Amino acid sequence: QVQLMESGGGLVRPGGSLRLSCAASVSIFRFNAMGWYRQAPGKQRELVAVITSGGVTNYADAVKGRFTISRDNAKNTVYLQMNSLKPEDTAVYYCKAEESRGIIKYNYWGQGTQVTVSS
Image 1 (cartoon, rainbow, N blue to C red):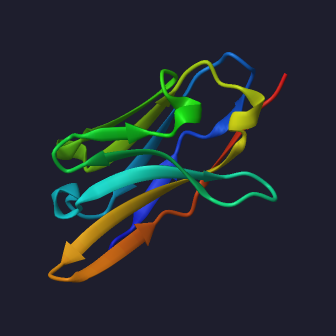
Image 2 (image 1 turned 90 degrees about the vertical axis):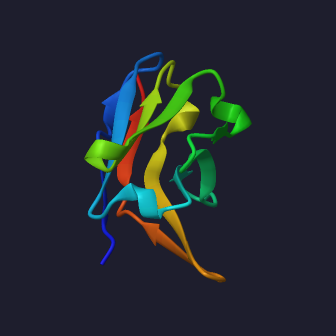
């Protein structure tokens, strides 16, 4: 059973920083990629950043240059360092892991962590 547990969310002022963590209950080597998504009230869930098993990263245009995704294989954890936060970054942030077993793909999601950027 794969479980993803996010932590690190909270209330921060504009321009501030937060670091989100996503701890997996299994080795993250089994996942093709892990990523962070977010969903603001009344909006669809959107990709924020993704990192592959090989360490290749990709970011949404809205967060490029401000957010950094990284992974610690020894701790089975993926991080999202968020700097220069803006009110529009306010959302619930979800961790996702993607696994392929042959031709079947599996997606696993965490429960989400709230990030609120407000003065």
